[in-house]
Length: 217
Image 1 (cartoon, rainbow, N blue to C red):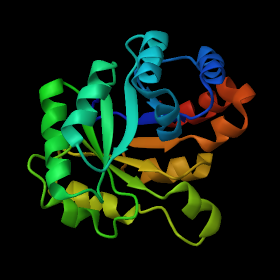
Image 2: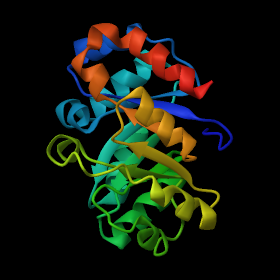
Image 3: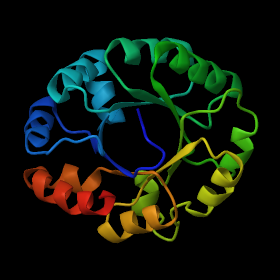
């Protein structure tokens, strides 16, 4: 259960299963660190990969980054049965799909996360949703980071969303440095998602996690 009065670090894992196992073995797992089965990992290993992660991390919060675009109910059922604590749906999906996704998450006892990557006005999507998701993910994509460095993290949307929907948590993906994560929390986000630094230097997993974890104390 996510506590709206706390800050969280979400670490996305996208390497091979043996590498992910080794990386996680170096982590000091806590309720403030969320483990993510990244989209490439889910595509590679499916529900079995999510289930293996669940067995590895015990009761630690586990996000299945499905990036669902259709058949929301079916995808949630698969993620929930594999042991996910939460799953993601894209804000670009049809409203009918997002609504079904959120409802199925509620029925299945897991949190719904709507990823607003490439959504210009996330607030307008939220206005159409019934019920609301547990978490809204504001997301600057990987390719954008590399090929459009002028594009900023969408931090301006945090206060607009929270000003109207105070029960919705905000997660921000796309910032990979300590400074960017500090900015995410300074702007009142609840969750900061990181992956690249862990992906590129898996042997430094413990050191990296310790550095980022200082920001959520």
